[in-house]
Image 1 (tube, rainbow, N blue to C red):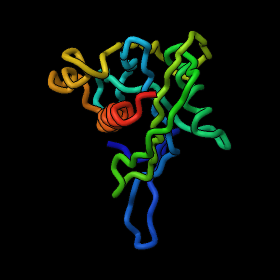
Image 2: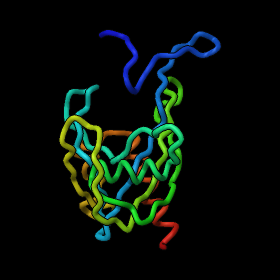
Image 3: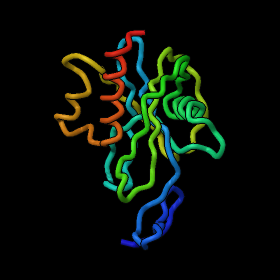
Image 4: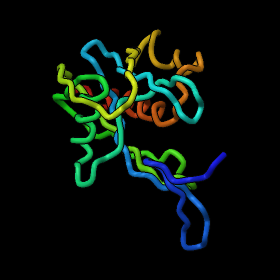
Length: 166
């Protein structure tokens, strides 16, 4: 395997010479429909050579506030605008060797609005319940939902909605 910097990742060294991966921070969006369904995207995984279920999201543009990134990515990837965005938290998926912060937002009051995205492929979507017998936990048990950032974001959403019913 060849080691090189790419558009999104690069190798860096800390003050002690330890190598780690650096990247731009990202936003993940848990888009929740009025019916209580989360909208997941189905996109290719370059690392594993297969389709993967993830959340809409992407890297920040320089100077762009996180909530603007969240709504822009939602419009680009699934054609929806968030009437309401709630910040749920910041995740560090592999904090020892990957400098990345994933800012997680809950998007509600969704309405159609499409922006042109930058992906060179078609993004498909899959809707899954946040709660109940057909909830996302089923996808975890089936081995279809495996991205740790997505799992954390979905559980953050459940916790947030359990404690705040507004």
